[in-house]
Every structure is written in structure tokens, then in C-alpha cells.
Image (cartoon, rainbow, N blue to C red):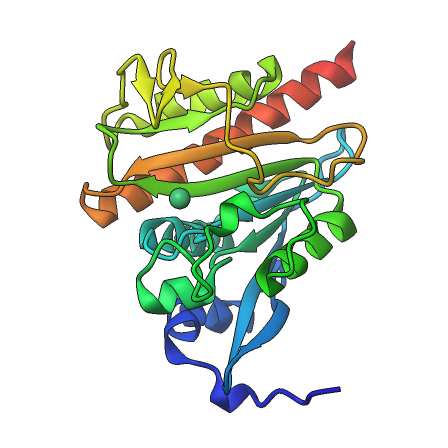
Length: 267
Ligand SMILES: [Zn+2]
């Protein structure tokens, strides 16, 4: 077993996550940890993980949601949005009523450090899931996805080729019904991309229902299937606006899913 010395961890991911680590020391709802560590040469990297436990909801069993940012290292808004959202939650725990939220703000720490889309091995990590990838980031994240059995998965991205906000709803009507209110809510910060083709896929009202192979997704065998949403901000827009839009979208998805669960419980 290799003993990893945390003092050799690079600064950038640590610096990004520091405000949330600090907050977790004073919040009973928030805990911090590490999903896993790996080595690249003599450097040690970690995929940070934060868990926010919202207040119990009497009418609904606890739902576990995974929020993933920074799979592409050159999309810093996707990393900062999760951090900002959790900081806001720590001041407003009621927003997470009925939820246990698991945040992985930097899924590609070498890319984040290098300001590159790909990890340092030159791979697009968001094409490597569930295909026997040897990449340590993928092994760590797949382990998390298997262990946690999330009820919902939200991946945050930023796209430098788009005109505005959009998202992937991955072929299921239910996903679309969660994504649409998120886009509507986030529109107060940034406009939506209304082109008929976005990122090479046909789009309708800023929603794409197809996707690439190998993207971050629940384990293939997981049943029932969780909801899956990818939310994209325009990477060339001011970062603060992207963060605000993504935070608003996250809150809207959680609100809408809670509404759906309450409705289902009443049936
Ligand atoms: Zn991306």
C-alpha cells in the first residue's frame, strides 16, 4: 500500500474547495472528504467530495443526488458552481429538505490544474465511463456511482461553442421535465441557446435528448434508473453569471423533483 502524503497535493483543487472545507467545520449538515486519490508521477491528486444532509421531509424518503463538476478541466464555472451552491445551502438548509446531496466539484483534477479539457493522460474523461477504463479518475467515480446508487445525477459543464444555456435530458421524458424548469429559472442570469442544432445534436427549446457514449452515467445495471441531467453554461460568458445560472438550475431541479415525489406519494 502506498502512503500518500497530503502535503504533496497540488494547491489549485485544494484552494478551490477550501471555503467549503472551512464551512464544513462549522456546519452539522455538511461534511467533507475525498472520493479517492491517485498518483501522476510524483504528484498526488484527489477527487474531493462533500455531502450535504438536508432536513428530513415527512412525506418522502430521503433521496440521494450526485452533483458532478469539472469533468473537463477547462470549465472552471462547473467546479465553482457546486462549491457556491453548497455554501448557499449551508446558510439555507431548508433548500435541501428531503435530500442527501453528494458533490464532486472537481472530477478531473489534473485537467483543472492544467486548464485543459482532457486529463493529463490526454483523454476526455467524459467518454470513458462504463467501458473498462483504466483511468484512475474513472475508477474512483464509478466506485462512487456504484456505492451511492444515486436517485438522480446532475453533471455541470461549460461549452465555449454555444450561444447560451442548454442541457441534455438523455432520452427520457422525466429528465426533460426536470431540466426544463431549470432552464426557465436560470434564464434570469443568462439567455438560453435556442439553435436547432447544439453541440452537433438536434435540440428543441435548448434541450438535447441524445448524447455521446461513455459519459458520466449511473451504473448500467442500476434499477430503477435515476434521473440524469447535464446542464451546460456558455463558457465565454462571465464566470459569475455562469455560476449563478448553474446554482439556480440546481435549486430548480431539486424543487421540481421534490414536487414530483410529493405528487407521486399522493397517488
Ligand atoms: Zn464539459
